[in-house]
Image (cartoon, each protein chain N blue to C red):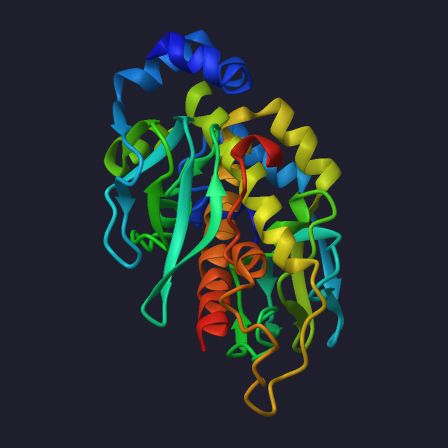
Length: 151
Length: 181
């Protein structure tokens, strides 16, 4: 599916004006990635945020508190990942790699910062998405830590 | 309350702006606690998040029938923002007043109404939360990932009860809200 169509259908960006959607589409780059390409590595900052246009992305990782493996997951068309790439030097929380050929749109921090400054409503939506992801991750980490410490 | 926030939390007041602060006060209420009063109970549903305006709170967990303090929370910190943003809506620790405490209470519904669409106050609040949450997650993320567990961990000398600092860090609790912003 094409980027414009996916963004318009997305729950995250569906409410944006035509101008904002157009700005987001213009800011995002589209690339093809070969099987095995590592988009993110757990513990390392990622280059960009990605939106899967075609193909599948395998997600794996380990709990950073207790080392237990996460349930593997697969991301497909329309799914956004590597949101932490929008934060300066923020380590990725999981490994994401191409499972077969993948076509994805991507947005690096520099392009996002330009968008954020020019379109505050778009920036706000990304910030809220980031806040929610950070809170969910923190909740999970706190649970792991509490379990580990009271075991 | 406006003056209290401007005096106690000048950085916050500047960031939110005069209009934003006035709007925030319209949709929130003041809560005062005395030393020993409980604000939250771990595992219990929550319906609000709080901005600590003055005083100190202690975060505690119960372990082996004892109360273990895992961190102190100072003025400027948000309490309950993880719960509301994660959708969990339960408290992750007991939170008790250490001394005289003043809080601004923002009910979840008001928070969602406020942040449901872009406006300068919502933008400022969410950006502040991203900064503090990032610092807390980064505290975990920068650790070396442990190897998968192969056997139950042996108890360390001194046990975990005396190791409040470690548990506090793992729980992501801040000593003061101002330090991490």
